[in-house]
Image 1 (tube, rainbow, N blue to C red):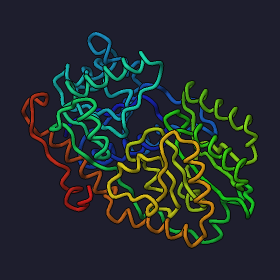
Image 2: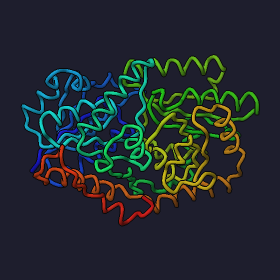
Image 3: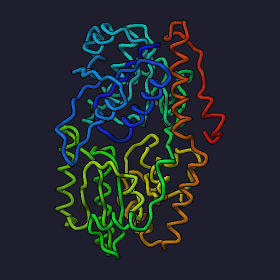
Image 4: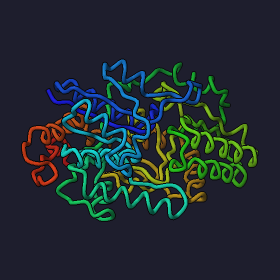
Length: 414
C-alpha cells in the first residue's frame, strides 16, 4: 500500500475540490493510503460558505492543516509542507489547485518523489502586473522542472502547459472530468415548479442560474453588467440566481463589489445571491437556462451538470476548446469579457420557444454520450498515479508514460 498526499489551499466545496475528493476516494478504493493537506481553514459556516472538509471526513480520508503550504515553493528547505512529508513518509505528492501546485511540485522534486500536478483549469494569475508575472514565473518553473506528471482536464489545458509554459509533452496527459449521470433522474413537474416558487419567480420571468464561487476569474461582474444591459435596453423580464460562495477575505470583497454593482444598476429585484447550495441538480432542472461567464476555465463540472440536467447552457468561448462542442447545437458560446455579447446571448436564449430550448438542452445531454463517465475518469486517474508509484526509475528523469487508456479507448473524441 502506497502513501499518497494530495494538497489544496482553499477548502471550498465546489468544482475542483469535488473532483479532487472523487479521485482521492478512487485511490483509497484501489488500496492506497490517502491524506489531504490544506492550507486555509474554512471560514465559519454561513449560507454562502461551505467547506469540502466534512465530505472528506465522511469519505474516511484523513486531513492535515498545513499553514503556509503554498509558500513552500519559495521557502528554503520546503517549509511546512516539507516537514509534513518528512514526518509521514509519503510515496507520491499530488497538487490540486493553482496556488499549491508550485509548492507541492517543488517539495516532491527536493524529496525525489513523484510529483503530480492535477491541472483543472487554464493557469490564471491575479494581482498587479509584477505580481502576476512573478506568480507565472514560479508556476512555470515548477511545472517544467519539478513536476513528474501533469494531469490535465482538457486538451486545451494540456496545450497551454506545453506551448505557454514549455512543459515537456511527455509529462502531460489528459483525463477529462467525468460525471455520474445516474444522479440526474428527471424530476416531475411539481419539483420543477418548486424552484420558481422558492425564489418567487413570476411566470413571465426567464430564470437563469449560475454556479461557482466569488472569484474574479468566474466573471460574475460581467454577467451582472450584461443583465443590466438586457433589462434596460431590451426590457427583458429575468431573474438570475447566483449560487456562489465566498471562503476568504478576497472572495468576500469580490462579493461586496458585485452587490454594489447590483445596487448601482438597480437590479436588486432581478439578481439574487443565494449562497452555497447542495441541491444544484434541482436548481438546474428547475431553471430556464444556465450561464457560465468565466474569464478562464478548464473543463467545468457545472457545464457537464447543466448538460446532464438538460438545462440550456450559455458560456464564454473557452467552449471552443472543449472537444466536440458545437456552438448553437450544444449551447451558446460568447466572447470572454464581452458584456454586449453575453447580453445578446441571454436575450437570444430567453427568446427561444420552450420547444427550441428543449432541443438545445437535449443536444447538451447527448453530448455526454461521448464524454467519459465519472468511473472511467477515476480509473484513468488512478492508473496514472499507480504507473508512477510502481516505476522504480527516478521519476524526475523518467520518460515513460502510461496514457489514460480507459478514456482513450472508450471515448475517442478525447
